[in-house]
Length: 134
Image 1 (tube, rainbow, N blue to C red):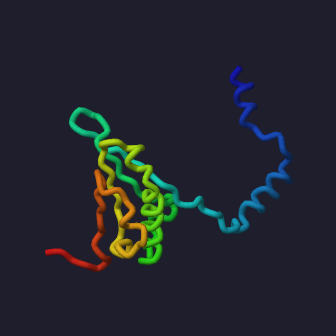
Image 2: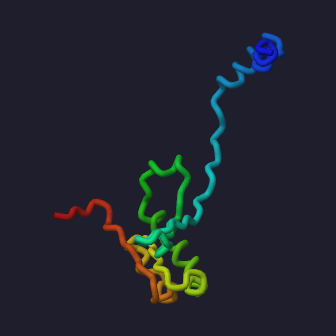
């Protein structure tokens, strides 16, 4: 039985094929397309472990998280959040729960900002890069 199990892990390909495979692997891989960012919803629980609020963010792939985003890219992600939630369906979907939207200062100029629901919405602004607080 043990020999049969060990045989599962042995390769049946000839040695010449293995050399070709390792040679092919040694070549540099072409640029891999990363998946696009996606909308993320994170629940915030109250003391009774009931959902009290949601934090919505535009999530980026793990490989892109180390990248320092430029202001225009941060503004783009803020605009995506505003565009998504300015449709008016947010009140119907969430009921009495709070919604937190982290936005950048540049998002204050968005044309649909006034179309966001005023009830149960908390807009979080990150300070501009390089700003220090005492």
